[in-house]
Length: 102
Image (cartoon, rainbow, N blue to C red; front, side, top):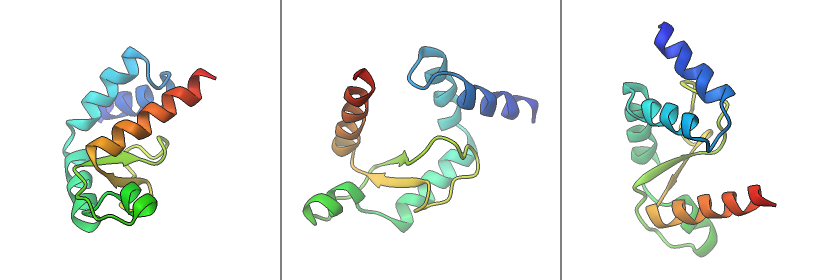
């Protein structure tokens, strides 16, 4: 449990996007919790929500994106998570990075 608390602490306190945060996030994505919640999200929401919203197209989602990064190990499918295609996820992150540079 101490290791889990340290992981939550790192994800919460380290600057998002930094190397140390990336290492912590990579560890998080290998946890049984993330694998289960990711699979559940894709089961309940199999299509890219960004594509549905923007173009009305049903493209299968192959990734899951966090809407916010405050609910570590407490995420709810459809609330804190978004099903998204790999291409749209890349676009989403590129836009986020451009906004941060301003």
